[in-house]
Image (cartoon, rainbow, N blue to C red):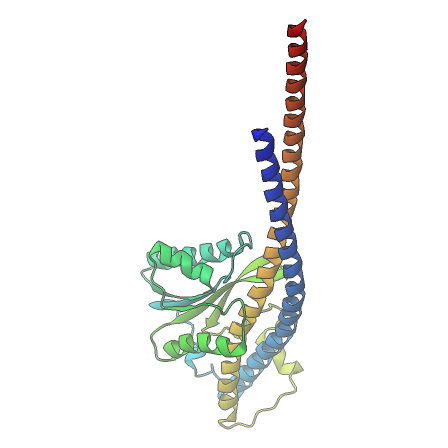
Length: 304
């Protein structure tokens, strides 16, 4: 009977877990719909910023007959110091969502260590912070509670610090790594070079035409004075901030997608486990009944 009680207790425990995972899946599904909508809307705006940025830079090139005079566009093939901003989740129970991002960061650390390049880490999300703190890896900056509730103001704070260091010459490159939303059942790792800016493909979505094609299709006209560079500087600031904000929104949608999948798998596993335990319970119960019947029959026979 003790064995039967133990099995029954396990069945009850697994059923309670199944109810919890099912509820968490429903919550993640509802949150995913909102996050997916926000990510899609942000994506459209980000693409347009990239198009306008390349268009203005191209017009300035036309007037100056040369490259844009800005450190933001100067690609350094032999950087000395690099800033890596990586986004992970604040909460758990989302399967292997954070693993790919952490692996990508570790691969970059190994790659640049071989080239004797200093890599400074800026962590967004408690899971990434916890991992590298446990590994004893120094983090230049940590931002907790941002990836679970992103806002434009928080994105500004994160990216501005990295851009200021780049402008001051403390770093030669800024890389942004996050796990992005692809669809309801999959996510994809995105590694973006924030600065220096590449004009042909200013990240986010690789659908932008090359600069040469902008000459014929552009309706924009710039006066040959300093206003073009002022517009470019202002737009660059928006570009940096919005790429960071988009990464936070995109990562949140991917996180909900991963958690929804993880909870669905957990619910299915719990259901399967309940079936196995129920079978074991019925088998043990049958054995118990058989044993009792044998004992009764043996007792009756001994009384004859």
